Length: 356
Image (cartoon, rainbow, N blue to C red; front, side):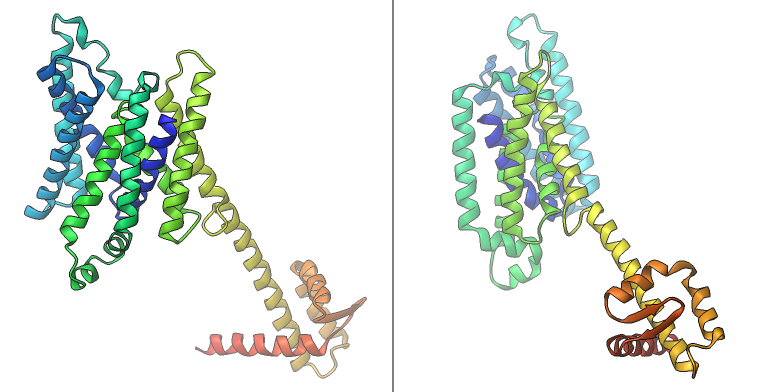
């Protein structure tokens, strides 16, 4: 239940990150949360998950606002700002974890689970927390759907309508940070960005509608969590977080291949069909040219020209016969009335294009 809820909320919010071209944001935020976990432990001396995640949330928000500050106050691009914050915070977090591990206190053991996650440590209280946050996130999405949608596709137009784009942007980013922090215990700092991006990337291949994409991303994320957890439970010493990410990646791969509109398979099928249609039109236009330039198309010279052309269009001629454009009787051929009209249009278009 916990991994399903996590997959759903990260899928929903990841759709906005992907469409806003902020794919690295999840990676930067998850890494920025690490020092917050370490500092929260140093202050409290306890491994209470809520306390540690609160520290991660504060650290993640600080990292996010630093990224925004770097982008707005300097001439650096967003990818540079994301890379700087990611490296700085993650390096500082690893330094603190190393310091904690060297302390003579057995209570610090297990903090490294936040690097790669450990879903087995989830308890009922954690699942309820995830469910409450997901419900709040869904409610906010429904209430501000119009504002989020307009800002996503046209920020300048949003300003002209009188909306406070900065507030809306901060609201979206804050929920993304919250979702990432919730997933640290399950998937970990290193792999959390994949949970944010993979379901959204898979959903994007199937639709051009934002609403449908958000729903599909939530479904893909939830199924990734459920299937990944089930697979990891069948084997000993098989980490749940990495398996969940692998399952999510499989959804992405299948979407890239089998999506009807953007999938590689259907693109190839459409390419082959278009090439065959081109050969068909080319053959029909050529036959029309022979009929127009030879008074007697049964003359051996005309038949020889057609036979020479048939070297790579025998299958195409059969298709023309099936379409009732051409009649064949041995070496004798003639165009039907329907074929002549179609060929006339194709030939005129072809000659017009050549003249241009």
